[in-house]
Length: 258
Image (tube, rainbow, N blue to C red):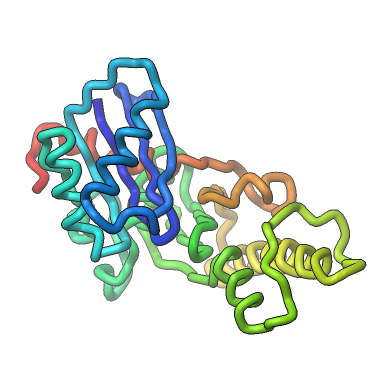
């Protein structure tokens, strides 16, 4: 079985695959992992959620938090006695990248692109709502072209409350009307509808600039709240990055990855 691990700035996504089937998935807050022992404790809890006998034979990792690399690599090695495959952008051969400085692209964005090309029909726009909201574009020929990065919803809410002392920190919820009747509902509607129109506006501008009619896939932790709100989304795939890791692993079964 394969353990796919995507380490983001906010959370660590884990998925256990039996072949192409995702049999167990979960998330760990990235801030909770500062030592190898933290990882061991959280992984033990993760696997305690199932009664299945899950025998991990391979581990593949994408990570956008470089300081965690040694903790993660050493931790998984000790837990499973397996040397994990730690991906870097230069290692990705599954998709052509037409980007001048490809080493600057977050590995998760390229892994998403690999999954999208395999699962859907290009041209494609991938909208990933995480710590940042990223928009990644894949051409009709299946080439990764680049995209756009905007501040994420959660960090925007945190910044708003920290910089404006009279404004409270809120939990994002689906606003029903644009007009708030108090401070909290005003912030809720401003954040909720503001990011709805940000996403719709950027997608529309990409379509115009590239003259494309893309298939649009949305992923990331806040996708569900916008499932029926953001116009133009064709599909929501909450496990796009994990699927990309699985696909890359399958392509490399006959080769070593160190």
